[in-house]
Image (cartoon, rainbow, N blue to C red; front, side, top):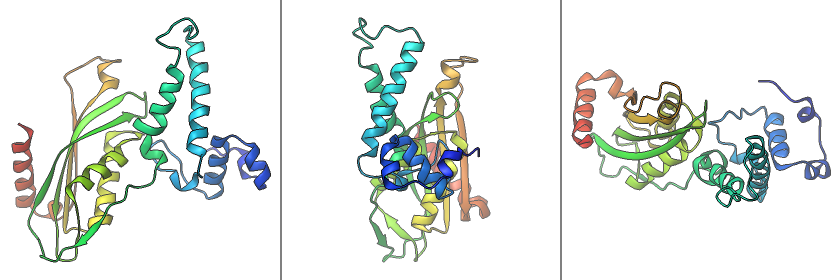
Length: 243
C-alpha cells in the first residue's frame, strides 16, 4: 500500500493534536503497520472524541462535493443540511462497523453438550459496495454444529455480529468470509455454514440496470465441508425459511 512519508515521521503529542482526526488516525495505523482497507475495523486506533471530529471532516468534504456537483445548498432547502446528514450516516450508520468496537457478546458454556444442527436466519443485513458505495441489501442464514466445547451465544447476538461485519464498504464475498471467521473464533463449532443472498444497487442504479439479479454465495467450514449429508440438511432447511 502507498505510504504517506509524513505519517512515518515521529510526531509529538502536540504535533498530533494539531493534525486533523483523519491524519492522526492514519498516522497511528501506519505506525502500527496496520491495514485500513474499506472493510477493516479501525476502532482500536481511534481515541475518545475523534469520531465526532471525523464527522465534521466528512461534512466539510461532502459540502465540497455538493458544490462540485453545482448544487445550491444555500437556497435549496432540501440539500441545505445534506452534508451533515451524509456525514452522520457514513460514520455512525452504514459504515459504523469500521469505527465502533465489536459489540458485547455474552458466551455460555455448552453444559447440555448440544451437538445438533441449529440454523439462525434469515438475518436482514445492509452493507455497501466498496466500488461505488451503493447499497447491498440482503439476508444471511447461519448454520452451526456445536460440540461439547463450543461457546453458545444468544440468537440476537448473531444479528449484532452480522450488523457489525456488514456495516462497512465491501464486496459480498469478503463480507461472508469475515463473518465466518468471527463466528468460528467465537463459537468454535465442529461445523459452520453461512449463506448470503443480496441485491446490489450498483447493478440496479447504474451499469446494466438489472433489477432482478441477486448474488448468492456461501462459506462452509468443518463438518459442513466434509459431510455432504449435513450440508444437504442445512440447505434443505434453509430453503424452508425462504418462503
